[in-house]
Length: 103
Ligand SMILES: [Zn+2]
Image (cartoon, rainbow, N blue to C red; front, side, top):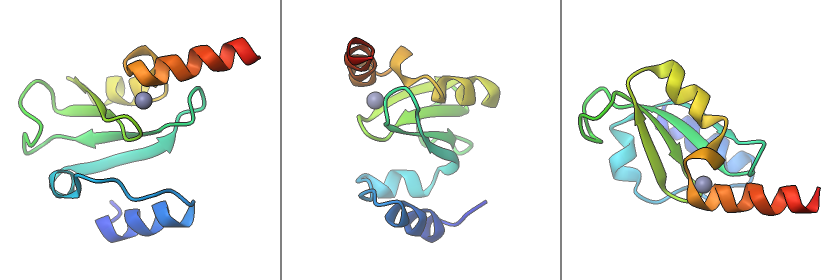
């Protein structure tokens, strides 16, 4: 697992602004973080093993760009959802829609 410092360094390297609410996230393990091809938003998969985000589900898909969060029972679901944020993040849905109009 990368440390929080390594993650922040990587974020700066690709030219993104570090996100707020750091405190909450520092306690939660970031499993993956990548840009969704459909909307360009950075989506994270988080491991909620200490129930920092409540007990609805251990695995979390999070849209860092818009603050939307979905909890899942399995890591596989969280990873699958992370690749299509337009299905669960309202703002990503709007972005995906407007992109389709342009295409
Ligand atoms: Zn979004």
